[in-house]
Image (cartoon, rainbow, N blue to C red; front, side, top):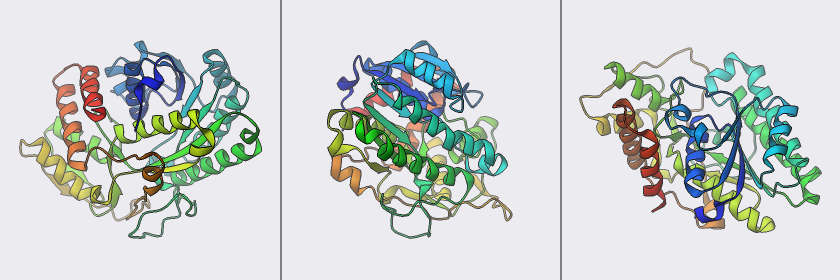
Length: 351
């Protein structure tokens, strides 16, 4: 599992640090005593976890676009990081149908630019490119996809992340094989957790409905997804980055990061769990959209590789993840200290 002591004093460069997952990673690394530089656009939502938790005051935060190679190189050259975690992305499936060119520019050329900056920065020893479980050619199988299955995402978001995987593999073979740089990709399932304010995601939609005193609207209650708390993949990424830093040949590769089968639930089941955890008469209604953009109905990951290689196991089941999300959201809605709540949850997860 993750050894936070390894990161004390380490220089870590994170793209996408102003996002939901990036903010949780920055908080973990801040508690570990790492020297963090973040490179990203302004926080993608308003409100944002990045601002609510005061992340900018804890790290060196650089506002920039991964499509801008010169600015990205400048930030990385100044930081001289040992470890790079690439999370900057256009991450919303529905948004990718609206803005496909921007999605490809960010998710594909952003990866090219990141790896090009790494190639010219001799301090870097370990790189993790974060993609998604949606990179696979989805045949709606009942079994989980493995890392050697065919890559071919359907929608522009998923497909652009498949391309990001191919770009990473090309750079590994063409450039990094002759350098002392370990490179891995991590393909995570859907994440939930406190501080996610994105649109078109079920749990943020649930919380917004609670704030307004309304019923929760579920647009696709029968789709099955591998839901997990955000700390599961965040800590897995850091674990992979650490272990391949220490022993490149044994550990660099591609890894699925997802929950066990018992935590692959339908959107409707997830909404039921949320309503139960929230209380106060929370309920949801089914408003399926007949003309909605295509999204996979069934998608599962086989995570045997990361379990076998690192002895990794998910720590929180879906009900635990929902409970932590609800607890955070109630602290936030009451005007409480969300950074302290993040610290409490990180310590509970790592205990």
